Image (tube, rainbow, N blue to C red; front, side, top):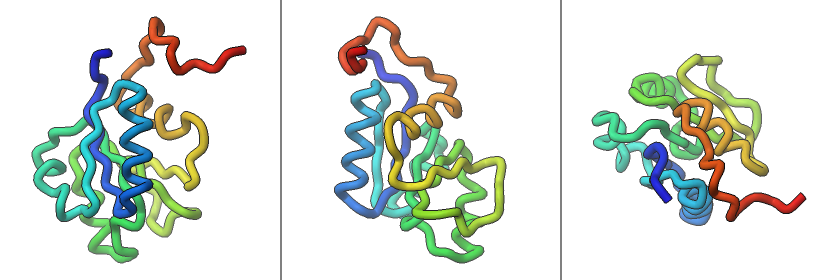
Length: 127
């Protein structure tokens, strides 16, 4: 399987982070993960990824965190527990947790332009 886009994951909870990594890798994405924004800062600033998935718990609920997010040079999907506390922004897509089914994969595909491999039937549900 060839890798699709490189996805940066920033999620403090190790179990949740590993779950997202697994889901992305199964779909053919290259997942690179960190537990904090600080740990991921070099990767973010170098724009070495095609998209970032960031859990709201990786940010503080203040204007400084929002400004940090505003300067991420790649598309961002923010995972939130409820309606987001930040103002609407074109550079962030919000998904409310828990994220069911392929909602995260669908959003990543929209942002990266990746298409699923039609020849890969290994994970398709049987009708």
